[in-house]
Length: 472
Image 1 (tube, rainbow, N blue to C red):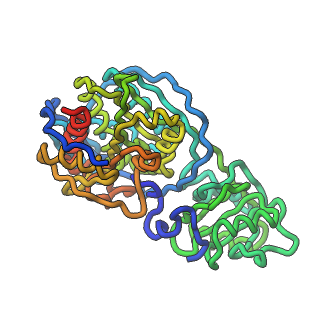
Image 2: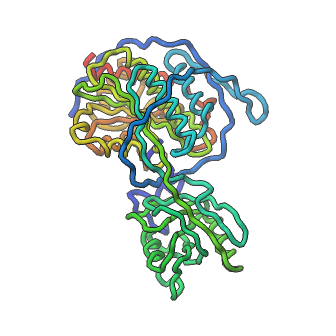
């Protein structure tokens, strides 16, 4: 959840709009909708999650979309309780009504597949599962591919001499692509005077964040000196994530302060050879259509990718699971508009999938969209919250009130979700989330930690809002 959610902790302050320093019409109110007929109850279990993950928002030019065939229907088994680190089964949330179906899908995503970073095999596995379910509900389903870069982790920066090892790294947004090999050179803070007089042609610049020098300027100076890649290490504890202001011609990555200091010390002892590799991977949006060709369109969406090393029970298995249950029930209601259910990929890397979807829509297609409803991180909190276009928010508030659901207005700080590209294209859109986001991107985002009432409320609200938009 959240555009720039990879800006964890203090890193969030450094990246807004790419200015990264190296230092320091109202619509009618809703009418009550028909009651939801609940499916049989289900239970869910939890498994131990990994260490707190971090990701970096790096985007490359996306290919034009090309629909691909999807897999056939799959069954929905309920897994047995998983053992915890102590060997005892984890706590098992229970649910009834629509929440039970949501919970079962969350299990399949968060526990059956696990972490789903954009571009990974698990990312593709989740897309196939979602596509198969939507196809089973009667939707026409396609997968829309786009390109992404890897998030924070190994395989990007490799030290070759004096001893081989991987250094965890993250691409900066607007980095160049490709592979570069050469000796590391200590280039201080990346000012012109910090580079050797003869330049560093064919070598890799190691620079420290700081000195009131923009990342953009550091990289520009490195390119002018002949660098084939740039490595910037943090000026404070923890990994470094960042953004350039324009497209770089060389690979540019960030590493943790401790790693940077270790490399600087190693340079004091002699030659350090390294390689930087940034290769684009493919992710995809799953786009399902019902009542195709009707004059107006309503989009319901959620992202299905996660940050590395967590299955993301709340963020965002919960949103994905909710739109699947909404889609199944909506298919029975014969709405007067075309309904598009979209599971977005690459949200955790900076809304890559939803941006790609909106950017590739011709203007006449954008004009057909009556509303976009986004569901994200629904699993924890005392109530639902909502932000977005005012008229659609009022309609949603009325639908919620008619169904006894509390939905409070919110204003996300330092981030957004997949509704944002639609709003930017002047398409009415809202995002619905639960009020507690404290567990997202942490090992605590497990099935056992879910507040199941929010899951059912999100489904009821989604269907009530669709009914309202249909004039029912």
